[in-house]
Length: 197
Image (tube, rainbow, N blue to C red; front, top):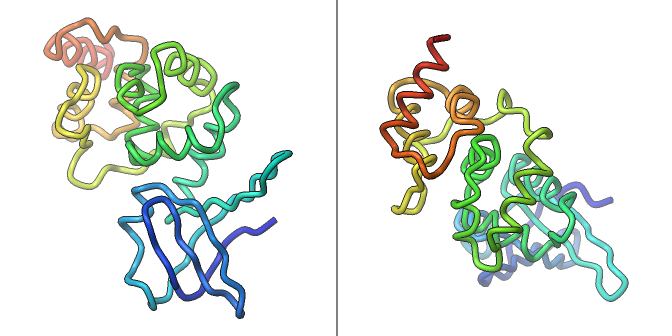
């Protein structure tokens, strides 16, 4: 297994990075989030990797950090989710946003990812919800950004984080609540849960 690549970035294009390591150029498929974290061509870079072997292809996937790699591997455990869909999800969502969507049951947020329909989003949440340890979720930098169009659960989570709660607390307090409720109702219910009432 190739755990990580460390070398010189010799080529980068949307979705692909080539790293020269010991005279060999390794091409790794990457998310848009990892692309934005890459240095300029010619600079040193490190990518954590996952090698996926199928009948018709052997592909290397690279990630800027271990949290993104972990989310990718978790997504691959969902039936019907392959590497391409997992990359699409993690290109649209940061690892924190993805984990928060799973923990809070925000399937509407997942359906904004190209190729993820309502049934697939619900399946992802159903199969991963019990496998997500919200205590390991990293605090978001600058709040949780849901691409300028937050869902009700996303807005409520962002509001709770801005009030000083951790993403882990926000996710637990919003777990199982309906996207159909208003943001203010979601926040009120979450605050009651957080206060123990």
